[in-house]
Image 1 (cartoon, rainbow, N blue to C red):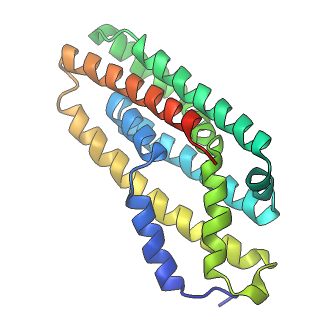
Image 2: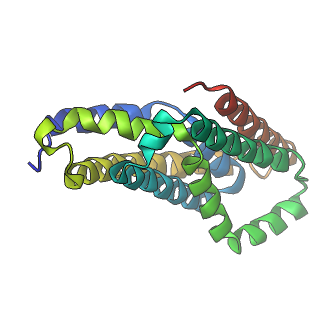
Length: 211
């Protein structure tokens, strides 16, 4: 079908890869636990949009630049790392009184676009994902269709779809679990600090990743 081989094996491999904890998973968990279900869902949509853009870039051949250019790879990597560290520091410096929680909740309602874009940037500024699409998808496309964009798009959309379903499930259940303990001031403060540390660690890890 459209030059795709072992499609069933691709779906299974894709699901297993989606289930493997990574930077995106940790980011979604952090958002869902600290800011609630709706914020978690918006973050998932942002992450998925970033993954979709990576897929399109791979089809267009732009990801080859990252594969061949160490300068381009490192530039995007360090920008992404700095952004995650910024988010972590912001979480660590946010006050956690109940009044501020309510204000933060109201503010979050008005900033879903910003949260969505944060998700997009978090995924888009991780060059490893671009290289993943470039290396993983061709394994399931027959050589005679290697220059055809359609099989790449089908596989990419399939992977993004399964990943989105898993991440939405993760966001909903983690937010529900967190909501039962969020009313406690100390626990909420701990969640914010944990989220901040998590983002900083992810940023450092991304910065230290080698090609």
